[in-house]
Length: 335
Image 1 (tube, rainbow, N blue to C red):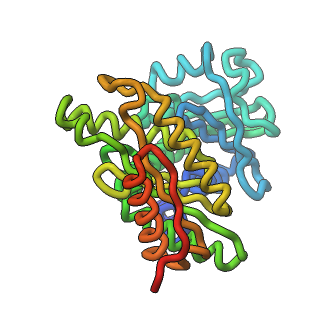
Image 2: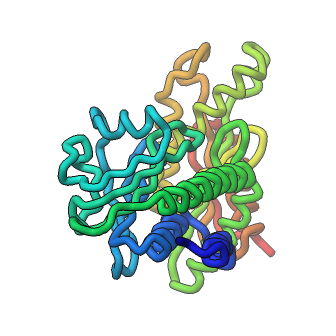
Image 3: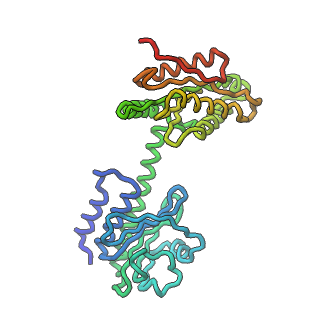
């Protein structure tokens, strides 16, 4: 029988937010608490995130959970568990052919207890406890405990999802879904500091959509908004995974290129220019929507956020003045 004080103490420990919270460390704490309270040999959590179903496996004595992708397509056990939405206990997994593939790796097919979790995404999710073959089966008290932990875990995962959504909203431009100006400035400060510490170069590209006003006048601002969203996708597809694309103004974007010199920035900018020029936008004549781009480099053009933006903006102005649909760069701005 579990003492009320021990359960409350465990829940308080799980709720502690003094350390960083991710899905991994959240589920690790839950599994560790479940093993300690239920005195079992292993515990698993199955959750789906970004269309990938993963099983977190923690055995008694393991320092941290093992994580593996699993395929639940066609699982009779999954259909049974999720259809009834109630805890399911087995005195001996080895005698139940439906449970093949859901045991705890390294523990064996002995007594087990499963409790489904109903997450917002509607994807399969559950917590499970396992004991080695020949051990005592799980009691009704064990079932009540795991149901309590499953309810807490469901709420914690949903809160984490909401927190991640809010964090994304805080740094993302609503229209284009790339980073916003607020995040751009903090990212530039971070990258300049890193480049200075390690003696690396850094480049930024500022680009402006040519002829967007004409497009808006002819087709409406809603169509123009769709065009900018499509433009953001094109830009993001042409840069490296650790480069950063951000919305700067009404029809301007900025790209941060860590560890990139002037020649490298020119190459990327030309690739961006060509990708946009070759793209066919809805209701637009071929090559009528283009971009002009300005390049600035750290530390040659400036060693500050404001200075780099001013240098790139000035180069962008030159590109516009010299005929648009082109890439330009300048030397260091005068003080």
